[in-house]
Each structure stands twice: as structure tokens, then as C-alpha cells.
Image (cartoon, rainbow, N blue to C red; front, top):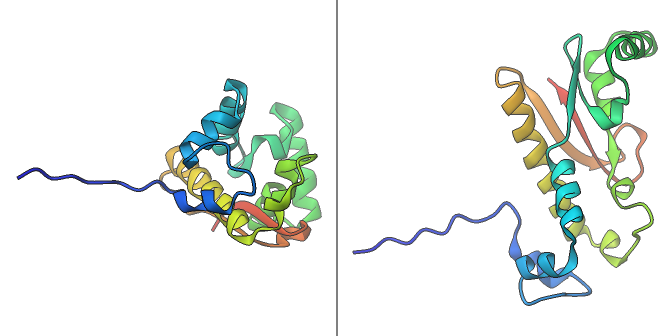
Length: 161
């Protein structure tokens, strides 16, 4: 007897039916009909971003925007601003509104809660895997929610618990 196993994606392929414009017959087909190779590469970077650790603090590097001595100085300013509250500092730096991922790309899908939550689930899954790969013995939390750290709408953040 043969055994067949389907291991489902983290993306529910039925989300395709929520799309206003479908460029293909499946979610996979839609993606291949919608993106250039540069789009795939840049999307992969968003899903597996550079992460910088500064004196034990963990940041998405593109959100922290500092390296070497400048990173230390920036962290010292943040510690002063937030009374050395590590969790609060990481949450503040690592919070990003879903809308900011799509500046200039406003469409009806940005008002579709199912699509936005699917996007959030994708980010959480990938950022958490990335953080656990880099810091397997640390309790890194990646979550999304409404208006995190003053961001508008649904937002994502990463911090150590």
C-alpha cells in the first residue's frame, strides 16, 4: 500500500479567492504571473531579514539603521529614553505597520482583514524561524496586533521575553 502525505503551506491557498484580481488559476500561479525575479528576492529578504544584536538587544537591522560605534551610541540613547527597559526598546524599534510594507501600493486588499491577518501570520512564522535559528536558547517573541507601539493599524513587532 502506498502512502501519500500533503504537508500544507503556512499560507492557506484559499486566500487566493479573497484577491480582487487573480492573475492565474492558483495562488502559486498568481505569484509566478505577478512578480519579476527581483520581487521574489526582495520578498525573501523581508521574510528573512538581516538581524543585528547590539549588547544583547535584538533588532531588525533595517529598522535599527545603525552599525558598529553608531549602533552602540544609538542604543545608549534608547536606554536613556526608555529607562533601560529592554523589552520596550526592542518592541519600539522592531514595530512596523503593515501599511508601511506597501507604501504607494494601496488596494482593496489592504482593507481585507483575512488578507492582512494572513500576511501577519506569514511574517510571524518567518521572523520567528529566523530568530530561533540565530538565537536558539532565547525566548524571542514575534507578534502582530492593532496599533502596536503607536503604529497605525495592524503592526508587527519582535522582542525578547
